[in-house]
Length: 218
Image (cartoon, rainbow, N blue to C red; front, side, top):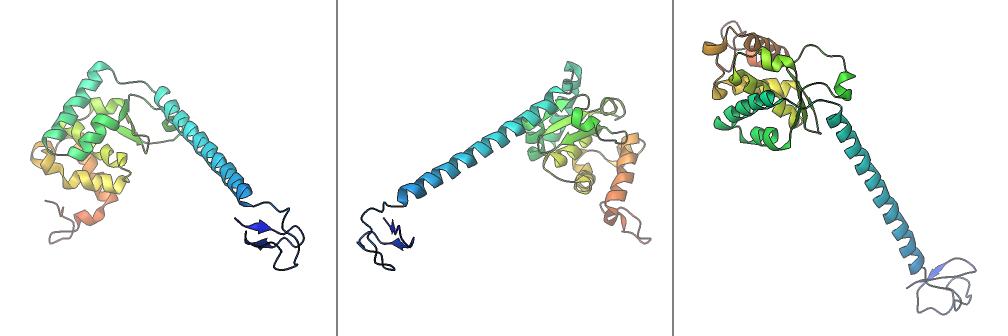
């Protein structure tokens, strides 16, 4: 335990009876350890209070997103479950876990999504809150549950923090594994939209063949 000289403020060892600098008496000087421990305790309490305040704000923000949007109807939930089941059958285990156990599905925009101007979309994801909005087009335009599974697979990449390029690449590279092939879906609106957008976000996938414009994944 060190001691502080009241005359010159030098820190001395506990065994010293007189200050090494000014030779002053140290008998009335108390140890600085309790003061250090007190300061450390105050810092810890402030940090704990700051962390608690951040957690409260974070949960408040999350619940504001949840409760400012509508839940899916029973029929809509059944449609989603069928599409997730297709992904599970095809072996997309990590994506299925996110969709099945961590995702909160909503049927319209929460206040945050509503504040952003966007084009017509099938779905939107709020990362890292794992909230997914499924718009009416998700249930209307896809040809079947396989195409809806492709949309969910795209959004699952966003659930993991991936950007649009990663999401389009992942779905396009895994479309055959999903059973979403050109032979069966070339005439669908979703197929053609996704192919066009994949080419926009990831043109490097379409530089094969003699002309350099063919799909490298085929």
